[in-house]
Length: 588
Image (cartoon, rainbow, N blue to C red; front, side):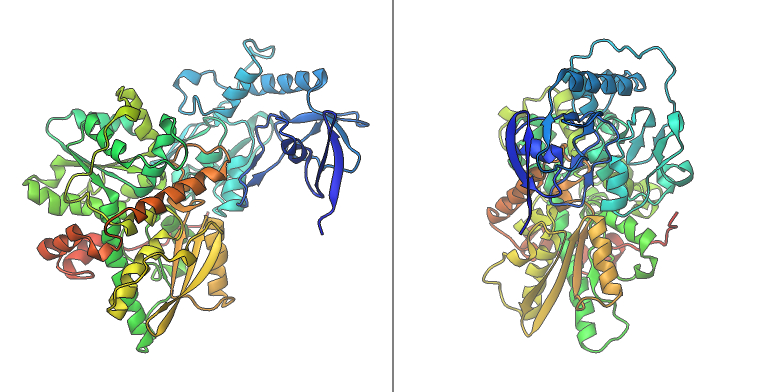
């Protein structure tokens, strides 16, 4: 039984479990203590309480110095005051010192309106700074295809370092140097693009300032739309529709699919399509590849590599290229839905429009920063012309809509265009952890048994546990499925598989971000509220339930694509257009 601690905060008694902090006790009483470096993503390993900023200091009776509430354990009989003049003056001084070494370019900062430092300055009513006037730290700006690092705006909260090293276990960032030269950076201060960074964007999601932001491509999109010589098509990922509404005042988990399609038309896109179409296409290839490997394995082919690993997430792909180069032949060779869409748009659809691929510009709206990196990979291009030209995030789309003065909330609901806009319920659940493997099982089970499923919901594959497993009867065989979301969880699961610590799996789904794509680094900022991610996932399952067709292989447009153009899954043409290979990368 957990021991309880009794203490008093601002004259009010409270009991908290042993090991709780003063901040935990204050929260239980709904007493608001401002924080900056502290962040606890409940339900994940992300707990940053380095107490480096000292914004959360409080008075503790009997102690001479102020105590950081985020890192000070609560003790029996403790008496805490959070709102004394001494406390308020100390917090203001700390904030002034932070701002004295911070650029004053809030008007043009990408995090303006979402900056926690800015919010605190407003909360404390800071209009002047006693410590202004001296020199400021200066660092080289680091720009990669997906993420921009401006360490002049870094407050050394170390949230990004905790996320990168302890949660994602990527190891791309660490604190180096001392004093005014101190900075969080990759090894040897190398550019992010040359490091082991996976571009998952979770560092951006937890950064409280503009030190880490996505690479903004909105003006490139506008330039493409303004070019009369270009045919501009857009694809939207499943997770976007469950989060975009948050940028326009909707409750988290509100589906805005129809308004999103309508807004894209008003922005001027020539064709408005859905990445869900390509998700169905991905299932056709990936589930076929899984069944092929499984059948050969059951027939005694010892060369077959199982479990098959899903390959839809580009951050996960780059992670295993760096961390597990000995497993490069294990993941599915199927491209991600984003890249499958681009390949089909610039071949099949460009031919239908009777235009060269160079005249078409494919724009993707993604919940993910790694998609920016993915579409820039050389293998996803033909003679230097990329399959997907520009990828922007959910946040960037919201900025475009607002910039164009579109009244989003009052738009009529509209549908996607045909034929690359038709999709099934299986496709939309790609946006949440467990969704890809559930979609694959829906098709693979019917193909393997020749019988239609009585129920397409596989609740055993759902949930937000970091690592989970499920056993699903399919005919005479029981499939053993593994699922992980978050790269740290992926590492734990794969290491257990490599060390024979778990029963062998047949297939494993891995997503880099918490909750899957709904928690992607390009989604509206959740500021540590994990309930938001859960509500986005629930919204995708609702859309799945409302779809008339819920299995990828029953999508009429997908059937027509194979009949007219691709031939068959894993065929020569589909292999050329829809499959890829992977590369061994360094671990520095």
